[in-house]
Length: 123
Image 1 (cartoon, one colour):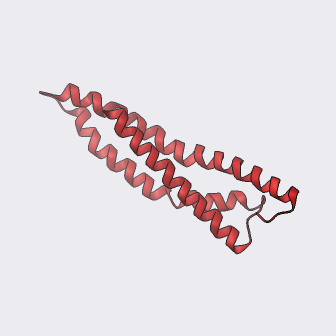
Image 2 (cartoon, one colour):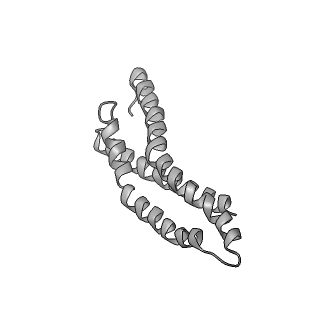
Image 3 (cartoon, helix red, strand yellow):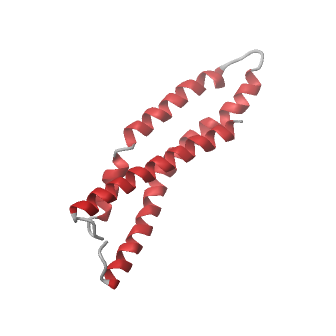
């Protein structure tokens, strides 16, 4: 059950990060300032808009799960088995969405920008 909940949160983190990255690219493209030299700046702007909300979400989930991990008594062992994967995932899921997803998006977009610049079409 903990893994199922973690998959949902991680998927949400990733999808929302892609939405913000795509919006930043769209704004730069509309302003005519999207090229290989400004790509890192544009993607940083998009990713940085998600740092505070993501940190608030992670800390809220931690705040809810820590008491479960410290609980004793009837049912505590079962609840801890559900909460443990969530705690571990709340360390890796934000790192994935803040570091890996923007890096992969950058690789994909830079390849597309290079391809378009060699064919002469607009980015």
